[in-house]
Image (cartoon, rainbow over all chains, first blue to last red; front, side, top):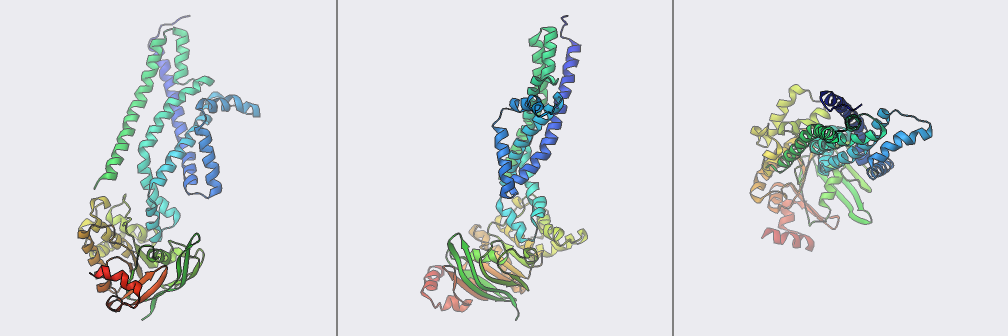
Length: 219
Length: 244
């Protein structure tokens, strides 16, 4: 039966959008925690920690996200691990976000001048105290813009999980199109929904980056 | 007078290159020592060895009752006894002047919050910057930033202060205020070691001057003698163009 694309359709898409946002938040939280640990290990840890983390980051960054998603959903059952689409999607996106956030944040930690470590050391602060009171507050300020920018990427990239049947916004659009055969109306609505979330975040990210440039050149 | 700092046979290598070839130096309490010499003579490296920022391969450093030998030591205790001021100030840009000053006393010494104001006022008045308490470093001139860095060091009540070319990054018109702050500190009896290119200042303020050359203490003695009656050709060649 063919339905017309109307209020019901928009509500259906909105429900998909909720899943997109939920998946994005979960990805950012899990990827953020792991990414922070990896960033610290990568920039401050001993060689035997830095090397495997660097390898992980390179590996994931050089692999299409879709392949990571397929591996979690179709690949893991090969080892007897069957994950439902939501779990496989969360796992794949977390692996992906961890690699990128770790790399972004490593750069921010290393962007704090070496002399800040020296000044703290000379005042008798320990390594962890220096990290907490001197390095991290500065690194966080540097990271705000790029981090919000990457959150936009996460929101958009959740759409690849549609290919393993997870009903987020893009998959909801496909399903609705199959029922209404009004692809233009359906997908323009989907696009507008992504835009409504991503565009304000992009603006915010730019603003944060600009603010940081002003801060660092102020005198 | 008791010995505040004693360096014996200090050797330091960067890879195969020997930067310090056995430095001996004795500093009595209340001494103000100027360390002069060409770039690459090992002055700054020696200073950085004294508070453990650079590891060294041979020799011994005794400072305020602590012995620093080869390998990792109890640097943390030592560093609370030795203050260091850097060429590029190295203030914490995300903290106000007052917060820069109280960070180490609060974190390392566990100084209660109620005594922070008193400490800030005390050290800032010594460098004449009481009115800048709530400013951020980037709102201050280079000279003011360097004076805050001195105050930040003083807040840990060090027994010895090290100054690493602290006026070299400053515009000429700003060096005066920093040198004045250092001179006033010298007058309070603070033991200090200054690596400096300011020959006039060294001659005027330092009780003793050390000339370093090729990783060694080449010549040392009371400042008046070092500048007035240099014994070696190398020292003569170094100070003559500076004194003209």
